[in-house]
Length: 254
Image 1 (cartoon, rainbow, N blue to C red):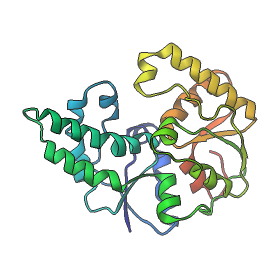
Image 2 (image 1 turned 60 degrees about the vertical axis):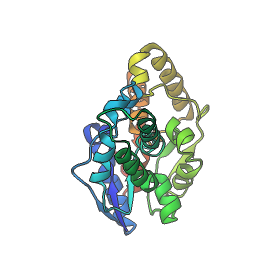
Image 3 (image 1 turned 45 degrees about the vertical axis):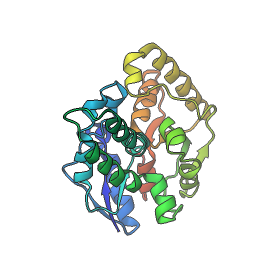
């Protein structure tokens, strides 16, 4: 089985340890992991701000980058949802418009090639590899925030929690209002900063109330928002991507 790691822009730029954790974890489970250098942004920021036509060239680029891999795994529910949910929609709209300069057939081919092979990390572990105990050790109190794309677009359900419950030494604390959005929403935070900050404050308060030392999620974009709010409030709760917890075998909290 050959897996291509789609690391995503946020992780590549701000959280490289998450990408390294995915590789360490999958290789520990016997998976051959490749990292195509040609990969780029999935196009979600463009698409979400209304630039659908400018997103189109990224579909065949992504398909070319990940050609030859059995599966594409990403530590981002947000970007996985972009490929699985929105790439087919982009291709369908292009076919309806038949706009000069666009290539609907190439877009449809790219979307059809990518969508069935693309998995967020936890669903790949549970659904494809069939594991919930990955041999992790993380002796800390942890609370889990289910991100919107993971919860609503991908339907991750209890997969992340099942994996956390099998981590040795980990105590999982319940998060009140867990399914409420943290307020980040990508470009939403830029266009509606006051609302975004208020939602972030509510989420940070709920995290602090758990008494957990760590808050984790399957998207570093959301953890960036929650962690920034916690830090500004003087909290010592650490935002840690779920992949880094699952990859841990020494229990250290860097």
